[in-house]
Length: 352
Image 1 (tube, rainbow, N blue to C red):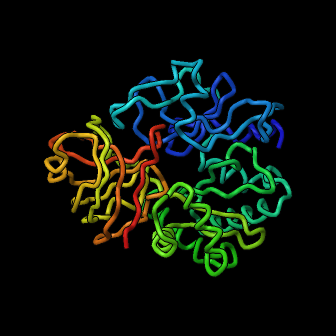
Image 2 (cartoon, one colour):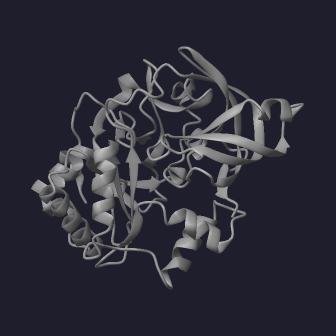
């Protein structure tokens, strides 16, 4: 695509989770979460100018970044992009608000691509996405479904995946309806399950084939009906959701546990929040971890891979940050899975 894809960018007032932001340096950030400090939008570098890249935007060569923690290195010459987040409880990356030049809204992209399908080009995956967009519009769901990923900014190619988002309970319902229509999206089954396992196992280490596939079967993902491209839809929180507004976190250390899910009601949208009780501590960087274990009541994940993945009663292996979280009238300990770590990969895997 050429710079004509700038028509996908708008100046909407509300920046939502998984939207993209272009800054004055030509770097595109992927927004993470909906709680931001007054100075920055929290997120990580998704595309950045680099002659070694294979994407093209604005007449320049861009490189894609798929590992959140690598944003620290990419932004090494821009310390203003390092920011402490009270919500997450650590230093993460973000784009200074005054540096933002273009906001790419997932919702607006879906509407724009429906109105101007020529922006999608003529790849097989593009035709599949257009059919899905048309179905969303037929359902009257364009206000609760959006397009993110490479199609959001127009740097897709014939091998691109399709990344969708849906908002709130109604959006999740519409997402399930889309993924149940086999004329649009085929489920992962049969030989295709190996393809899915290889896609996920590289960062969900330690999980058997059968258990990982059971975990993955709970999520909105599949293959597009024509080109067979991977497609997923990440459920996000409703515009009015204030679950994490005013929540502050303080990192205590790192911990790995076997935990039982006690409440999955808040686990269907990113950031996912699950009620848990700890059965056993397997590893920890804090002294007397069993003392903390008795007070751990929840797991929060900014990693979309674990949204909708667990159900009440599941026994899960968790490896993440031990955090103390405080909000109005409540405080307690939890385990947090954040992508902003270069020390290790945080995990949440079913055990049986």
